[in-house]
Image (cartoon, rainbow, N blue to C red; front, side):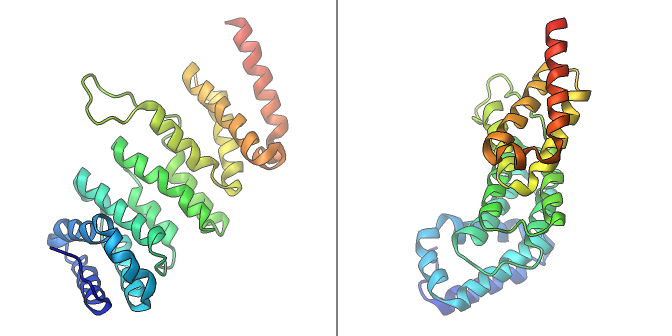
Length: 247
């Protein structure tokens, strides 16, 4: 079916979909309808959403419902991906009013995600959150960092015969950018890297930690990127050099 071609019809449809997200048995099909409307048909609905406040407000209510009423991690893999794409489209493509505590809602939605394709989607949304200036408090920064740092370092390796096409490097790059995208995450990222350097016996994990430290300094400058931890970073680097020579 073609998407609505006038603002009244689009507003009505968005409102209907928002209400149906509260009905758990319907969620799977409603999410698919939301994706068809807001992602697949983006080029057709975007002019209406950008030009008519009532359409944008209705899309904002749908976004709020997706974050509040949908238990994303209970959905099948493909429907989780659809939900992330709908959230991203509503929040960043259409300029809709964001619900209160949007960032925390998104973090709750992705919390526990394990599929590499979906993780890449989620990691790629976080720089857009930072770009919009939505990391507004230490609590918001902590919510973002808590839900991403648990994946560091990336250990995923595609299985033999993999046809999905997600590589270790793709996930590493996306996760790294999610931790580098705001200076408000830098202190936590520095502490994470120092902790991995001190505790990990894996050379790969230690190299990833060193890469994170150097990337923080390169992106934000040593004073901001490493903050008050510069002395600890230097001590950790000296220890790594000593260990490397011993090995």
